[in-house]
Image (cartoon, rainbow, N blue to C red; front, side, top):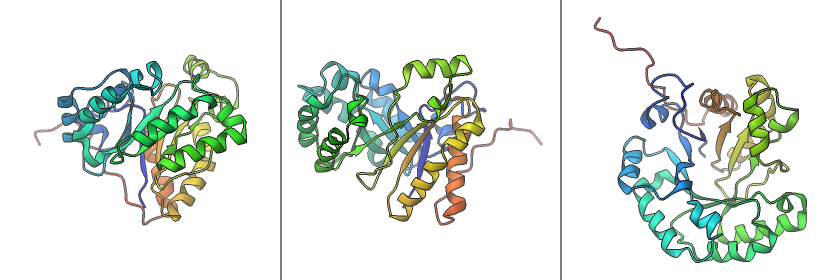
Length: 276
């Protein structure tokens, strides 16, 4: 039983020094991160070696497959690209929590055969977490069940992006308006398919609204932990300025209910060094 929490990035100009600058500092605040940068291309192995060197063994990356695999080739004829990517992220070792297969909104129920073929042929030394955005997967119970069957056969997880709080009322800032335009508006999911569920939760500019909105998720994660699962929760806000503190608060809230839960690390000192 372990809870990992993190953010969509490991640097942000609004975060306190030195967490705004370095992965090592970020990893002293939380114990997971979404690796979104890998979507734009296969990283250099030397860069991944540095990621591993800056994080403790129990830190977890959820690495997004490059867009050439998921969006351009749509999971077809991608063996060379996939194995190149797997080789590049190999230095992460156990820190690589899952290969994140984020599919475009146009990837529809009719494409489930392609997803099944990809997962069935994918190397078993990795976990796989799939994020879909086509509305039919959320609006049609029959279609959702078909996707769950495909994922369950491969031991893969369905990654929901919970935008319910964001869309709870109209945006009140430019950041919220931008998030309204870009984030998927889909039904909330609360079903775990594996022992390692992943949830991406996005709140609002208001910390109190964000915290109020995740009350159901605290209950859900508590249930998963008591069932022996090890969930990973990523906290987002429209501009992510408060995401780092919110991730720690979420973990602290669960530790209040489950004191046996392993604590997060102590953040690196934010004070400048002194001679005295």
